[in-house]
Length: 419
Image 1 (cartoon, rainbow, N blue to C red):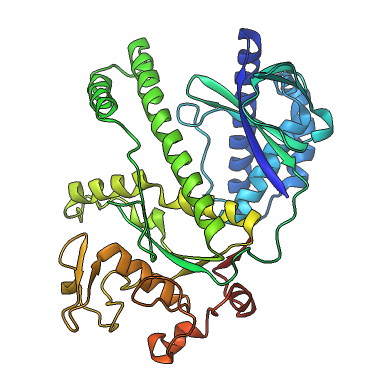
Image 2 (tube, one colour):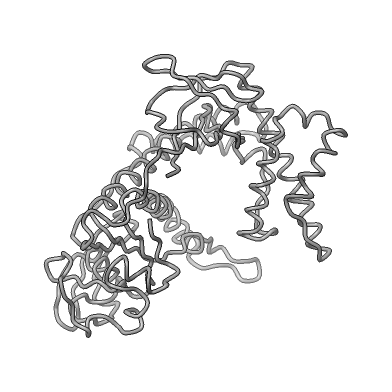
């Protein structure tokens, strides 16, 4: 099984400048190749990796500065661009801006990378044209190195090794008859159908106050000035801590869910569409723009997509199946009688059915409906039922996803992700 190992680099001044040069060259190759692809598409033709890699060799003769970076690093940049264009479309792939894109590059040849441990806290890696670079040995490497990616985050450089750890994905989960529905919200990050709430604060009150003050200072700085760069560096230091805490929470929550349950059911949420701006156009301006902006910030702060990605990664090691279901009416449907009424949800946390009087926490009720939508019954106490009534599951949904991980895969559901 392939897995990642990330460490913080300790580069000297010359190595840091060389990494910046490699990143700038890769960014230039990416943007030039993307523009070439778009121009070909405008003419009705097609351009892919093979001719661009051949033209890169000719470009090195005309522009000698391209030879400062390793050849296989530039070729890997073209491969990444080719994959992005195939998956998302040529005109949907973004440019790599020098101001917004942090420099990164990948060494795809694992046989050219040597990793050694030189102490209790330190290790070193030999990379082409960079030589030996030191990094903090914060965890075991745990396998054979296949590739290495060097990237800058804030003022620090990091290296990520892709290793083959010799593990095999299990054929079956340790507790195969368990399932859980997870409701992702803006007040509580994740609520399960068993009644557990997973949430934490990513930023402290002092950090929030300091961040607001720094943003006010940034608004008064002249663009391109040295003071603006200094304020931006301070803002990045605060947001980096917030980002690391969010990633740690998502990884821990995903690992706990993957270990405890054989099937994890999530809503099929399109986060990018949900967090689109409501500003509209000049001819048709949007309504309640400030309220929508606050909602977008709350959604992005909870890390819905990051939690789903972490859950898929953790599921590989446990045999858990991740199933995505339609989110329609899950928060307005009564789990007991299946009555759909927006008035049943009195507030963010209180759900009381207007038909049968069933009361429950609103997020727990929604998580149970999410689990039922995948074909699993949840009794009143919240755990997985051994049997279920046919009336408790709509026929259209029941034919899409089965009651077990093996049934979900055999049903051919494209939104069921196995291990």
